[in-house]
Amino acid sequence: MIILTPVKIGICGLGTVGIGTFNVLKRNINKIVYSAGKKIIIEQICACKTLFNKINFINKTNNIFDIVYNHNIDIVVELIGGCNIALKFVIESIKNGKHVVTANKYMIANYGTDIFSLANKKGVIVAFEAAVAGGIPIIKSLREGLVANSIKWLIGILNGTLNYILTSMHNEYKSFKKILLKAKLLGYAEFNHILDIEGIDVAHKLVILASIAYCIPLKIHQIYIEGISKIISDDIIYADKLGYKIKHLGISIINKYGLELRVHPTMIKKTCLISNINDINNAIEIMGDAVGSNFYSGIGAGSEPTASSIISDLINITSYINIKKKISFKDYIEKNIKILSMDNIITAYYLRIIASYPKYDLLSKIFEIFNVNKISIKSIYKKYIISKKLINIIIITNLVKELNMNISINNIELLDNVINSVYIRIGYLNNN
Image 1 (cartoon, rainbow, N blue to C red):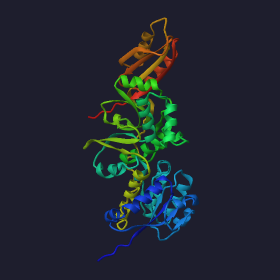
Image 2 (image 1 turned 180 degrees about the horizontal axis):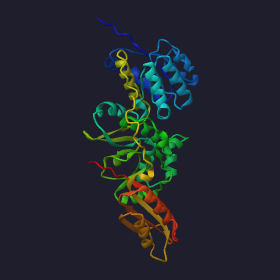
Image 3 (image 1 turned 120 degrees about the vertical axis):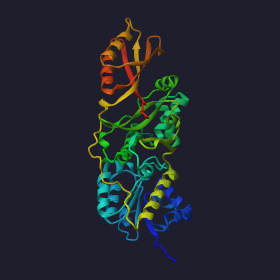
Image 4 (image 1 turned 30 degrees about the vertical axis):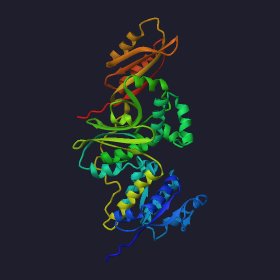
């Protein structure tokens, strides 16, 4: 009988995800050992001393380098969060010949190219399934299940906090500020919420997915990023009346001109599957040239859902550890793909114009501006009254280049009776 040497791991970080990982490893150890083909043993855990009493474990430390330089450890699990300390821990672990599992999307999105280059030189694996969409195995699906496909586009609800806020605004007809406060009290939103609310968290996840889907280097600085802080209840209500829901999406579309990478609120038809993903759930839809549309949904964050992905990576590394098969990023083969500027994207738009009651035909002036900029109108609504003195003019356009739309909006806002305007892009994807 062959007795396989156990794989020993070091966990760095005992926050929500760290504790979830510890608990799932302990609870499901028999299934995990069966799947991995050998025992996975927690050798050491690093955390702040104030967190030591959260778990029953003997070999604990508060010094990350105790794990880095522990020669018994084969794989480190980085769950520190943030960047500076986490990055130093990962780099030093790789230099010391350790495989790495991480859930750190910020670190991967911003420093992944250098991390993977070093890992390849040192012959170790860096796995990061948990960095995107929590418990949804989307990275594994892109790398393995869809590997034969040329990816035409992918879209995703990639942040549970944003989805919860927009769902609640739709269901409760309350303001963004009130729902954000509720989300904080429920623990769905961080009290320092900027990364979530302004779409930066989604951008980190989108750049990771796009890099895998299109075999390109990580390019976080080339993503257009817009959050949801400017969305108001009026737009939620009007979208609903027009047959849409507003969702915050990460969008990646490739065409003959280049690659679109954008993160922003989007109006989606209620008949679309992704429009019905609510609350803290995530969803990703991917269009492959061979397989067609694939849809993935589930809980995108949380202690044990994220732990599920971390342990999946541990099992994968353990399974391949003897043959040294790489499951970090491969060498890039599409380095010349152009990332398109927002001026060049083509989509439809919802435009809400706030105006005082005009003494002249305001609509004719708006039509004239649209005509000059080659924008055709799909539908228009002038019945929405804000007050006795103000009206909302709602316009849905057909497909138009964003540059033309921006020029038109700038000119419309110069008209005498126009006070302000709001626009939201409408989701349009070619499934052919």
